[in-house]
Figure (tube, rainbow, N blue to C red):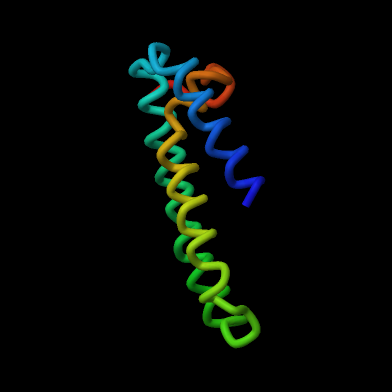
Length: 91
């Protein structure tokens, strides 16, 4: 629980520092990352079908869900903080 609290505090810090630095380039890089990260949903389905009987989903599903949501929600601000020059390609 303490780690989750620290994670939320870091998210607020990143959002506060980078909210004015999100531009068109950050939006484009974020969109490409969203398209790649959405494959994680299919990966989780495969894990569920392969190892579903060995994992207690009722205990960890909410943790997976809110951390995944938090990652995807904060992605534009994260990219604005760390810079997007290295990950960008010309169209």
